[in-house]
Image 1 (tube, rainbow, N blue to C red):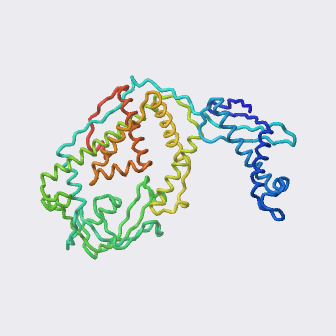
Image 2: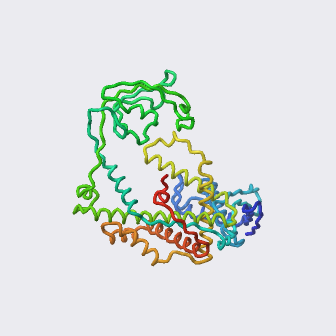
Image 3: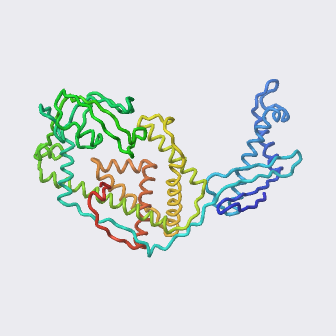
Length: 434
């Protein structure tokens, strides 16, 4: 076997391989002889079929199989010989074999993995959020939980801000209905932004069984493009008014949050502990995002197109599966590849950079690290021991744990090298709220 490599681009290569035709013919004959031992062809006893007849029946198929196997094996041997790191799948092209050819020639076009040139992180600033949960944060969280448990009582009075109203409404633009323009017995919580503010304000002061007609102009940047900037005429009938009533901050409320003894003080402590866990988790996530950005910004790398294409397919399939699980008809939802292109390239680059860091600085996940992560995760469950067993009995779950540890090792290594800048943030800023 002979081989040589052509450079077609920064990462693209073409490997030309030549294999003696005799090698292929020998293997074809060997396989046909094996088939002849058990072949059942009308007019001949089993095992007594002449090789010429076996060739007529099976020859072309066997030759195709042998050439495919030789192609794959020869390519693998040539890659090892030339010390190539193939990225993705090669594209094979076999040259047409003439009748008395002495050689079988083919070429394989592919990309190789790039050199990853890691940057100097010493002068790179990486922001680390700092945040302490305050009593005000705890009070706000409890207020939200009380609001989630709001009860509504029917009242016989005009509508006030904050009420929940039961309405029938019908809207038209230039006399024509539009998507979502009408509904019956619709429950609308005033002040929560379910509808446009101009629409909701028209409800204030209305009484049960009263009807009203008014106009509302949709903003030019409204999400429904077909009605953005247009004026609609609505007819609304008020069927009923309900007044919100927040639950009292007492033992019953504490019990509703899982505090069996109804201790309000203990409830505050539990809420604070939960917030602190969430804060710790969010800070870790934010730091990881900042570290990954720093790695992308400081590393020089040529991205293999074939790996981006594979990642693009994975992202699109994952999105289709997600939409399907939500009960949507995937064929009705356009998924242009451009939508995922940037994310696919980012993920490929990060994967290559992290693999280089792990190899160069021995940042592999150690068994004791994986065990500690799994045990820590299991503590949030009722039976931690069973959760640990479940992880160690599932290769997929264990691989996920190992990947998480590996990422943690990379983040820790980067933070040691870079300039970490602490930034005090509020709870809402950390949680991404405005």
